[in-house]
Length: 556
Ligand SMILES: [Zn+2]
Picture 1 (spheres, protein in one colour):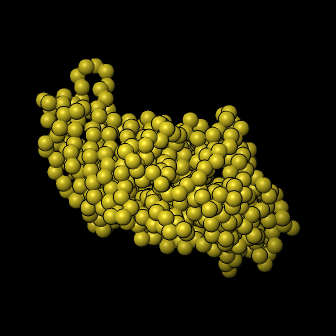
Picture 2: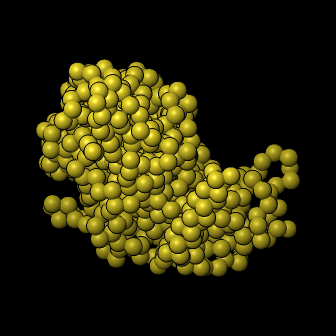
Picture 3: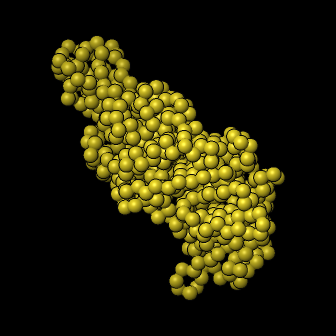
């Protein structure tokens, strides 16, 4: 009875939290961040984006042909298409028929589909595929601090020539093209990006060349690119500038992988040297995570006018052809200067973010926590296990514990930036709880095959790791992802006995920890437990293996 009462209290408390969280968000946030009635009846199959940007006026004109399947009857006959202000839709056609009724509500357009005219969903027995063609134009939001704030980038290279691209993670792809701007629905069959530019510039985008460049009129060239695999909206990106290119073939786990590199002409020699790290990265990550997830689309690294981003099969690179994070070692262990942070981190996202994508950015730790840990695993692969641990533990000083890693759901809001270093340190801790490196590697590879090209929730990832490890990790995930508390192992001595327990933790926290210097583990819980003091347990300072992200406190 007592237990039930407690559960009810906790339930009410969490409702209060949810209500107060929702009060901070607008109806527009909900439209953007949740799978609402204008979205939940249709499934995106493909995007075909055509685009003509104008560098001088910072203006774009384009279209997106959205191929979709209707999985049920549209509620109120409406479809939600996201396109952020001040961009404007010109026309909408469904299977070639013009739609007259469209209405704007902030960053959302409501497309009114006449039931009789369009027969959605089809009654033919097989699932019907529709094509929604949207033309649009306007001056898109311009990024002030890419890649952190997002928007279009109209800049100049070091020689004063035009250089354009986009960074839109968080802000959303609807900042520059009309789409279903929801991470839970990726185009299953990929996306084509067709860009028309002045003939003095080159336009690159995700994946492989769809058609050879077409010269139109006297001064314009059209470049066509395509990814055949599912892709996040924010990963679909054009890069336009004075690019040069070289290729190589990587012999990987799934055969020949086409690697393609694009940099500004004056950086070619520096880039050829620095990008030698790409095959090293691929080797380490295929070992830890399994085959590169997009062999059909190739691996591509493209110089960008910002630090970097995980754009699928078109990774953005702006780290100045230097090792470290802009030449710095984030871990202060020395190991972070042995490799190029952007090549390693942004490419690590091809497995965690691009192959495995979260439905809601509240669960973004699945992208950033695992990718942060990919830096440790890369270090370990080339410099040994202690080096990897040095790197991982070295980043702990960057953890803020300001708010939980998991953010509020349904409003397109991410949690704490602790998703990076604390996320990585949580995985490092879990790895040591599992205490079997081969099993841990099998789990990492298993995640990438079980959730291959899928969208997931944090719970699916947590449950999979618990099932596969054979250890109940649920309290560890709750502790590190859903609270800001770092567990404290309290201990005290009475006679020949040592007493110990967890405090500053979630109810039922039960993580076992290993001690330094001896093989013993403490199977601590939130209740006092006792052990007879042996030689390994030093009375004036109990030392826990440094790989566990916890603190220790002696009490009287
Ligand atoms: Zn990242």
